[in-house]
Image (cartoon, rainbow, N blue to C red):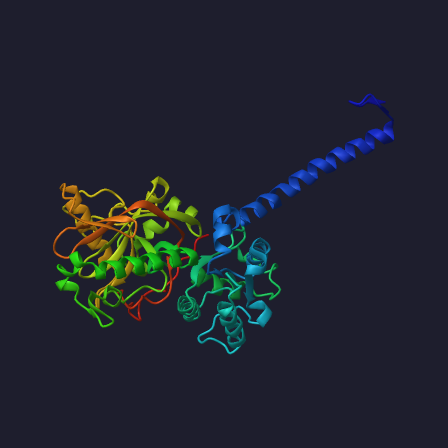
Amino acid sequence: MLLTPSGLLLGKRGITRKIQSTFSTILSSKMSSPATKDQAESQNFPFLMDEQTVATLKESKTLIILRGLPGSGKSYLAKEIQDKYRDSTRIISADKHNIKPVIRTVISKEYDDLDKALIGSFKKRSVNVIVLDDTHHDRERLESVFDTADAHNFTVILVEPKTQWRRDCNVLKDKSHWKLSMEELKGLRGPLEMEVLPFYFGWFLTTASMDTLKKLRHSFLDTLGGLKVFRKRATPFYVRDENHKGKVDLLSYFGQKPNIMHCTTKYCNHGTEPGSKEYSQLDAVKKSYGKVFTLSITALFITPETAGARVELDEQQLLLWPLDAEKEVMPSDNLPKGSRAHITLGCAKDVKDVQTGIDLLKFVQLQGKGEKGEEMGEICGGDLRYFNNGLWMLSLARKIEIKALFSGFYGKSSSTCERRKESSPLLSCTIA
């Protein structure tokens, strides 16, 4: 007989059942723990776990490209994303279009229908998060998707599942319904294991934040161009506004603008720039990839070449800022880390948008020497000052907070940037 904690007596059968029950519980616990851990790990992405990121992406335009071997967990991850974003998301799956994951030299015709579905989703106003589920090992295919996303102003997040078996061909050959051989899986795994980097990393403004900044840009440039004190010093900018005699048309002068406003952190040039690979492997970069941040804008400025917004970075955001970002352009000056953080609002003709950060550092240098500029009054909720040589800065009375997604730029470089060479490495970066 056995006395239980509750005071009941058990006979031999009761003892046996009790032992079996206890053993089953222990065994079940041991068997379920790894699965539970795997499941939790597979969801460990900011766009699934971070509340601010989820809430913001539901109102923005984001393409999540799933990349990985068949059976690695892409479809499960796609379902998790759909469950999180519900009506605001669409899943475009290669499997549903009967596209077999194989090494190919040209893009097959089966992709025509998939692309029609993808473009249709890009055009729907109600769709804010698109999930493209494919192996994405083909260079030509990925570049085509990147360019299409950029044309429709969608920010890209490139993701690989975090399952423990995602690269284990021995396990994967039994998980995929395609029943690929070990040789076929290893052939697919090769391109997926190649380290690839974006043109640049940075914070990409959400739709609502871009609308806010575009309105501020318009107000600032339009108001400044009409000021008498500006017109007296506006020789470098002079583009007359035909509708307003004497007014300087700064909106036309700074007519070159990026498709998606952004604050660049690290220029990688597809991995050819020094320190690019090391930057992509930083713990802060991996953890922050695909996460929405709140950036603070403290000032707007123009020079004869660029118009920009000054960004103030907090301690967490500075972890994503390269140590050499300021020294790259002004090696002789000991400028504070993050001084170059900016958002390009526009460039003059034939000026590359990389110039905006260089122009901002000119202001930082002058202010570091104690120069405050000549007071020119208040406009657009800020204090306007002139620093000579066509340098104007509007210091805002209140910081403007904007939302931005930390990711990479994956398409062809914009018209105001250096265009890539056709022989350059693949424009992508996988964060696993």
